[in-house]
Amino acid sequence: MRKLLIPLIIASLVGGLMSVFVVDEGERGIVLRFGRILKADDDQAKIYPPGLQFKVPFFDRVQILDARIQTMDDQSDRFVTSEKKDVIIDSYVKWRIQDFGQYYLSTGGGNRLTAEALLQRKVSDGLRAEIGSKTIKEIVSEKREQVMADVLDEVQASANDIGIEVIDLRIKKINLPDKISESIYARMRAERETVARRHRSQGREKAEVIRAQSELEVATILAEAEKTARVTRGEADAEVANIYAGTFNKEPEFYNFLRSLQAYEKSFSNKGDILVVDPSSEFFQYMKEPNINLN
Image (tube, rainbow, N blue to C red; front, side, top):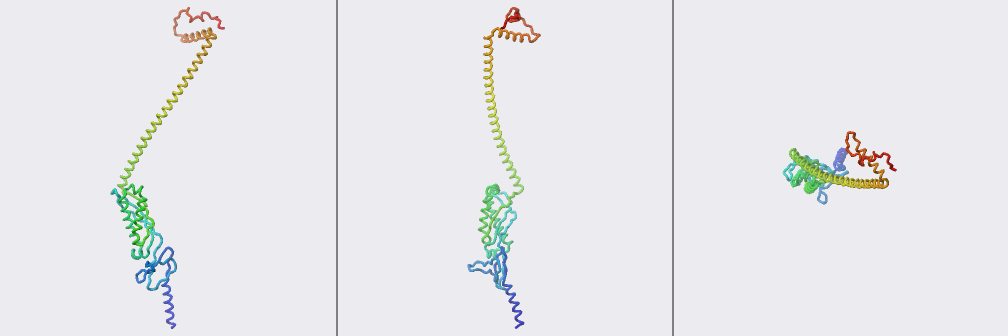
């Protein structure tokens, strides 16, 4: 009996160890018995959550699957737009396992590379259909978000058959082949130059309007200033005339004498001038009578 007890104890320990397995956090386990996935009461694959779990030794085999969100950073691929022009698009996809049993069967035993290859094909088909109905301008600017949303909806619906839930899909970069890039850049430059010429023309037109308004304002100001100056000058001349008239009325003899002196000064200012005047004329009256009383 003692000889059989030790082997029995060893077999029991080995069997106990083989009936226990641990599922780490962020993972899920499924058990295969005789090559078939164990199912729960709802006829779905039985999923083992993180923690210490049990299985039937020797008959059951455990497959551990990653339940975390995965990122498939897709390689750049070439697509054709509705204009029959090529674009090179780089995208990425966020996904995780939704149906672990379906995922295991669809990917040949839970192979992640196989899963991403299948998912990449679905993403490529969705992008090809959407981009084929859009122009380059729509893809680059106007409808880029709509393209990503439509492709995401389509891929989410088609990825269920491999047990995958697609969480997000984004277009990282859109490139154009060199020849197409050069033609597009040339067209963009031509469009920008047209806009620039239009703005310059509008600027010149506005400048002419502003200049004309400024010249009109300057002419108006100068005219008003000239008018004011003439009025002021006229008023001053009138006042001077009134002063002269008042002076003449008060002292006519002194006024005549002062005017004669002014006439003498103007007449004899240039020594080379020759003046022919009758000596008896009134012009020389104050020279003839220097002692005239002006009081």
